[in-house]
Image (cartoon, rainbow, N blue to C red; front, side, top):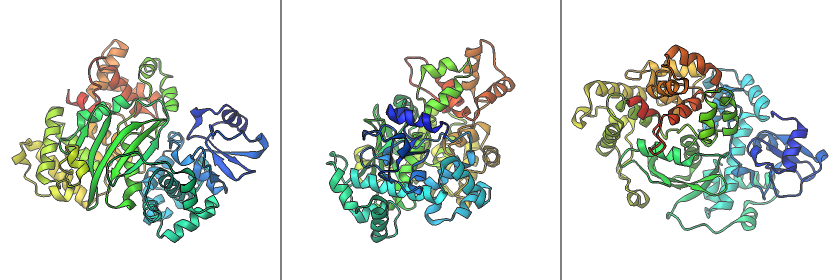
Length: 501
């Protein structure tokens, strides 16, 4: 916690929404923990405890408030910069690292010992890795109970519980009542939507430049796989052999609404994690922009575009293929080539939601592209070699694009791949690995923005020296620099377009 207890109490007295997701309040007289703006009467100063994570409050014995619903609060990565290890660990947990794995295995992936990992989680989050994973499951279950018409058996499976009985026991222990009582007390009628879909609201910390992120995704959309309009993003999705459809739209109260059509609800946590990654919902814009604004050059750029995010990627292999295709051809042509790959080698979409939205195929897996005839699709010879090498690497090591021990390790491994140059590696680190300090040093758009800001030509050495003051948020600095080069009436082109130039 970066505030003392008196400052935290002032935040809840004024119901300050700026601290939503960064501050949770445990009330000792009721055993309940709340968000800072909870409408319940403000408890006495002597009756409260403060936590910087929901899991820490639950580990201390508090249960979630039914009024302010902590499960819908934004999950903020405000600890980035304090501990990148914790940030990477959280990304792996969100991706399911502890669903079937152990804390020891998680620590090994992060390159540290189990005791050190536990200590870091306790220091920065106030809870153990296991508590973080368990809290995610139970809060997801509570959200599904109150926001959907799924049966309790379906919810138990979607939240990662091995059995309905175990789910009921855990829920009753935490909330003091069975799951059905929560639904009876708080269930609202579901709005009409896609048949058979689950609708989940995902919170974020405002401001959020929704138009900018949609414009970027629209410019990168793969025909038949993705469809982006002025107000929503839709795509086909696959995990293993199962596939479905995802639609994301803006919603009220600082949320995005994700409509998920997928046959196996046990995949729901993984799908939600990917949605958060694509739309950068874990970002804390106030902390990032306050830091970047300390540079006089960036300050006016940040002020002009509050809430600008780093767009993520749905799948690392899809992103890498897309990036390789754009190295030797224009952005629209690269999109068309990616669409040809999907229509030629990807599975055909079959659900009604996909077909109604003009989505016809899934992006092919590495296994489906082994031995593909890239020449028949009109792909240049140099690119064909890079795609074949990339496909072989992914088949051999499916985790090649997962979080690494450090940004330097990730970059070294990416640059070792055939066809992955420095810019492409930085792109993957930013969008798939979610490295907030990744920085495309040689990018043409960044260099042009520096020239405009400084009034003189920028060199790579000068830019790198300047970027030192932007750590650990260099990826966000790059996005602001890219945005500054766009004309006011033009679409908000970002890093792939600048690279092609």
